[in-house]
Image (tube, rainbow, N blue to C red; front, top):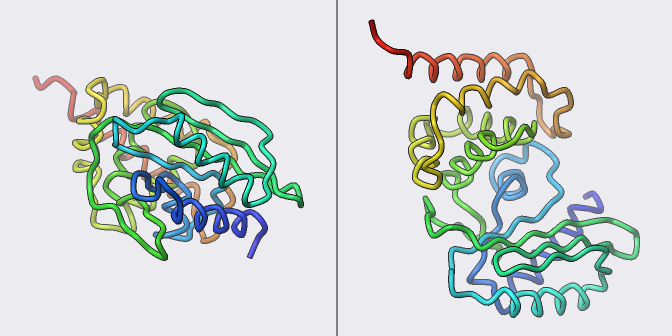
Length: 219
């Protein structure tokens, strides 16, 4: 087991034994890689909550206690009313980035639990991955959505409808253009299973074409 996975697991165990264990859940690429597909390396821990009344100053105090108890050193810290970020290192200089986010009160699927760790549903991760691709160009988002759409029975149509409920600015035209930016990506995340990059690009090109055809005016 690699050093970063050991550090992740150590922190997850401590966090989900703590004061805010029932308010947050692990989401994003690490939740996907650790609990669903084991498909790629993912280094960051992303915790989301839909609890709008939660006081992030109190969450910060709890986080600092956990970090100190684990013998970690805070290298960088960001604190706002809706977002906390910590970059920490252990004695071996293994780095871990931890984000806590107060998300909008729209969530899909059921939060899962394994070994006391609460983690996000595939539906919610998938809809968020569509929004991530819509807003940025990061190879790991394309990889993650590709696995969700090809390894489960979730359809792009369904995930798009969910994503639309989270961001009314989402549109087929602009999403299709964002999807085509996959051709600009050069370096994929380190994969733990085989992935054919050309096959993935062809998949997204076909998906973008479908979106363009959907909005094309009919003669």
